[in-house]
Image (cartoon, rainbow, N blue to C red):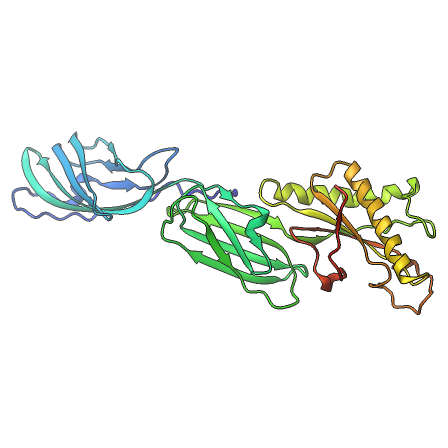
Length: 349
């Protein structure tokens, strides 16, 4: 099943009953069925007749569930021959209650009751931007190009476990109406991605999956002591994370604005303020390399010096594992509890 699940046919059996004794006929004689669940761009609802008797001057006076009166002219039908009659309806989900008048084998009948359901719709487009995802308020705002039927939201944490699953039902709110979906999230949990399915009233749907926070795995670049120039021999270590970043950016293209955040860290050798500046320059060197490679996201860098050690050591300890960098894609700056204690980001691209 593809992303845009479409239910094309909906067969509803009619209910027919005679209100007069002028004709000996029943619902089976008319061979009635309906193709009522359709995609508007392809077709409209159709009443299908295949009578076992000759029928003439058949017409229906129908009342739709929204109160609208809908006359339907069916006309003559030969026994055993199928006839299809279009129901003049636009988008929407309705129930029809009809009364049929006509002749069967030249005998008049009147007020046969007929009921059927229809659902006419189209696949909605989802309109969402980075400003519509507010992680601090735990809410997402969505707009559709069709009337709203239902929205399903799955929120995942950076540990790969579900944070929340939300379903919100709507009552056909018009296209373009802001739909606010809220989710629950415990303190300390980090939202890494979400998946969304939005349905219009007839059941046609569209969906998206978007990254909101993801650590990019990589091999750490080695810098010369006290320097921040990116050595040519170290550049190959950046190719794998570059490929992963571009893959993730393609997934959210057209939906969300995601930035790349580069954080730099040092060991405990030297003064803390000097290490802050050194790690900032090293992070900026890596960020500049990504910018040169044409990454479409905004790129920001920051140095955290020796404030977030990967390996705890005494002061003035030369530890290679602490001379590192973090690469994070996110709709918002990375949270402090993931090793980013301040938000003094400067933009490289």
